[in-house]
Image (cartoon, rainbow, N blue to C red; front, side, top):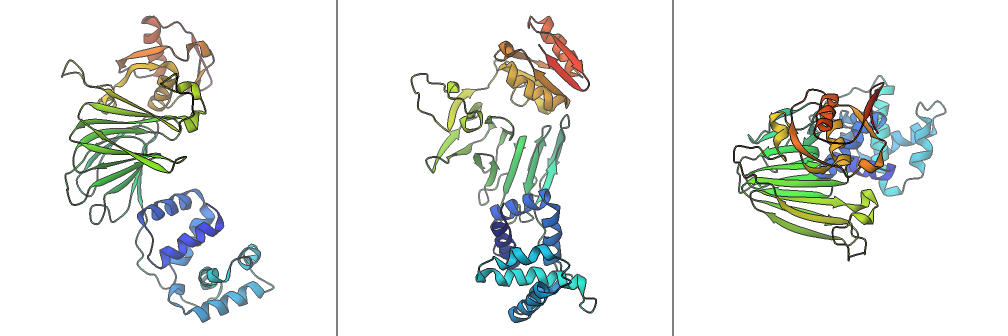
Length: 354
């Protein structure tokens, strides 16, 4: 996020005109930039917002013309701003002055808290209950975020990673889950979403109920809507990440496509057997005819271990099965016993497969 965009979002926050999407975006930026977090807290926790525009501009002029300016880097930056942003600039500098001039007294105000974020580390799984009683299981290396208004005026969630949702029905307030290039709309149902930012595919698997899946194509500025039935899975291959047109599922279509949409069924003949798509909820690592390169990504998150595949001839080796082994080395031994032709070694904290 560039400087202009950041301060425009702060301006909207001060005027209480932010959308849920803008607030999500601002919170993420504040988490990643400690200096911006300090500046944001300074502005929103002071009485500077109550000052008149002339007062703020006067304070602003004094600070940028001061020889002993404590914040010299601000001078060049703010002087380049268009005139319509001076009000926000004055608010920022005025807030800083509250710390520099002892005679000015800070007055705490009650601002709306930003998004609540829940995170799991690799090799960690967690079950949580949202304010609307929806139950969520988070797989390793996953994050969900939602606003304080969740369950009251909206039910919007942002997801990075994998999660299983058992959604509390509410026809008047559908749940919206945003995960990378897709959005899922649901009233009340059970489903799994896998959407890690470091993987070039993501998927939605419906256990019961119904969901609407929205897939945005940025190159065409269009959005496709897909309706899922129980036992159905949609997998999206993101070719913009892989930059590999050989992954197209229709050989005769050579034109580059941003997304590949693959529909399949994940129901099992044995009703007592947990589908591989949601086996992780039961502390089971499952693979269903997955390429070794993809399976290794799962193993890395499951065991929190870095795995390097040096033998590229093994990339598409098919892996199938459900495993409860406690270490990645034990799992690799089981795969070898099952006929997988590879060797591995451990160097420091890495596993090398060759």
